[in-house]
Length: 287
Image 1 (cartoon, rainbow, N blue to C red):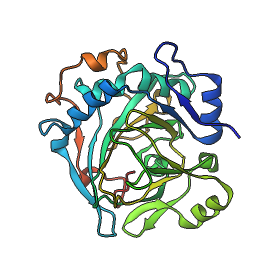
Image 2 (image 1 turned 30 degrees about the horizontal axis):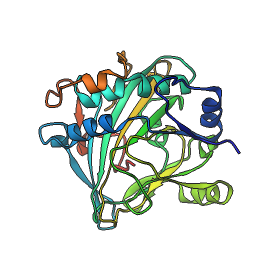
Image 3 (image 1 turned 180 degrees about the horizontal axis):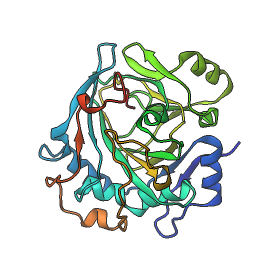
C-alpha cells in the first residue's frame, strides 16, 4: 500500500516521485512539520489578531445545534496569510503535485471549530461545489494547515483514501448541508480505508478536489482552527464568472518571506466572501 505521509526537510525539500505517486493513488499527501514553531506562532498570531482577517468571520450552523465560524477570501493579499499561501512550500508544492503547470489562488478559508461548540461537516468533495462554478476539470487541490493540533477529539479531518478516483459524485441536501450522495458514500466506505487525519500544528495535508472528506463536531475542551488554501490550474480557468476568481496570476514568494512579513491589518484586495455571497450552493458546506 502506498504511504501518503512524509516529513519536511528544509535543507533538501522537493516533491519526489513517491509523493506524486501517493497523491495520484490515495488522493492526498501529508507532510509533517512543514511549518516550524516560529512560523506557526507567526500565523496563529495573525489569525487571532482582532484587526486581521478574523473580523470578517461569520457563523454556520451544522443543523445539529452546533456552529462553525468561518472566514473566506478570494485573493491572497500581502499580509501574513497571503504570504503563507504564496510560499513555495505551499503554492509551489501544489503546482508540482498537479503536474507542474501554472496554478492560481482560488480561495483561502479559516475554519474555527471552537471548544465544546464546533460543528460537523458532512461527507463531501470540494469539486462537488467547484464544478458548479464553471471549472470543467478536477485540476484543483487544497492545502489543509492546522493552526492547532487536530485530533479525533476536536474534530480532525477524515478522508476515504483513494476516493478521488470515483470522480465527481452528485451532491444533494443532507440534513441542512449540501453533501455527497449518502448512498455512494456508504458504498465507498465498504471499499476504502477510512482515515482520521490527526495532525500537529504546522503539518500540511495536500488533497485532491475529488477526495471524499468530513469532520465531526468538536466536543473537546480544545479548539480546532485550520487554515485551508485552495488552488486551480490556469488551464482550468472557469468558463463563467462566479463568486470565486477566474485566473489571476499568482506571485509566489520564498519560504523565508513568511517570517519577514510584518503586515497583518492591511487586508486590501483580498475580496472577502460572506455567506450570502456564495450563490453556487443552496447552503454552505465547508470542511
